Image: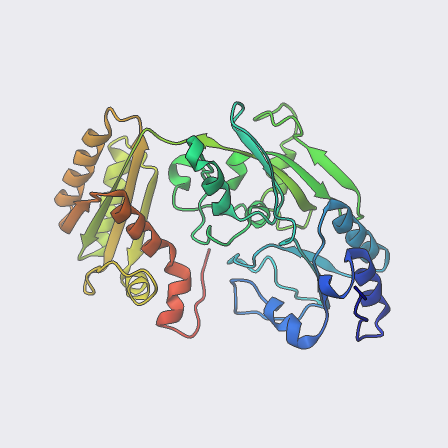
Length: 349
């Protein structure tokens, strides 16, 4: 098949296109670049010079090396769901989009780890191993579409980070490209907490400023034996907040403990997964406990007691996995749901 010619005389665009494989692997026209002028932080918008789509580590390194040698600013981008502006091209950068590097390279259940490319979608990892009794713990609200490479760049959290920690707590190894195009690998043996400097911790959350991640070794966990979820409605934010403090003071560390205020509730009920939350409450708590079966029911009873002591209007336990999944689907639409009630939304994340 004959390769299409680039409709530009810009030598940098032509050179970058040759590196990543031609017209189908680069965007440079204004109408195409508009979709890349911001991430989930929509207050600032700036057009990139171009967007390239490398298919492997070598192409990423070649793009970075070219940009370095020709003083072209560049930045990495995953799915663009980040809320802190980490993928906004403020200075006309070349965006290196990693969405085509989306393989699940290997799964090692015996040693509880998996290796993925940066464009691999977060939720797909859990879906790929759940039938064998394992899952990947970090669960940002955008996990159905955000990429693990982006999670590493932003050190993403999620509803279950209270008990299980954020992304950095689940990364065992990284392959990345330095700003001069050199390829480096750290933690290649996948050993948790090795001696010496915590270079993985340094890179995780650095928003691509120290290097562009091209391969990730992650920790996977065994599915908990039991799991139960509580939904509690409060007429006052203060009562819901005090219930949170009481739960922690009682010595419990729930797998997740989330609050939504009245504005968030209005948004999620107007969006794709309404579950019938009362419109006149000030706050709700979504509380999940997991672990071995023995003791789960006692924890739930204690949580119910605490909520009732804090003037809860209604508190209930999910009776089926379907009901539990609906509650969480409703909560995880929180950010996107604001579009149902407001033309703009600024998140302090």
